[in-house]
Image (cartoon, rainbow, N blue to C red):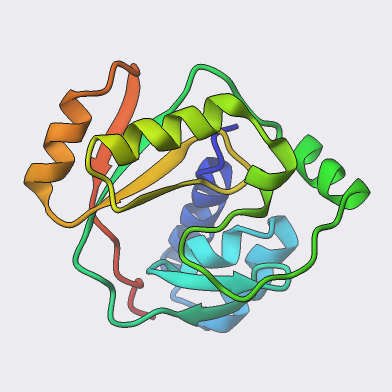
Length: 172
């Protein structure tokens, strides 16, 4: 319940492993379609990379080139239920907006001062920007280089914080 797709990544890993163990009977596209039956984030987790996903997760548009950057991800001490988040969205659908790197409709729906405070803290520590991950509650922030990311990381008091690099799409 952090908005990082943990269960979807697990499902994708199992599908990819089974496909490999059985001699790859399914194409990459077929595997992604099977994944979509499990969950909306599973196709992206099968595909990987830096992408804009639409529809039920099967429409994936890679964003290339992957920018040189470092992410600092913070998981605050509260959780957001994906089921409850989408129920909230169903009751209050917001208009579609053009694609922006730092936009998440759930931020508007939640209007949570803790999330906004965390984003501000990361920006004050040098992040180019910060945004809620998925349906929350984790927040990612973008830094130009590893040294800046490490400074911010060390300036945070949250127990669950991580530094990571973008991951390229997994070869098919």
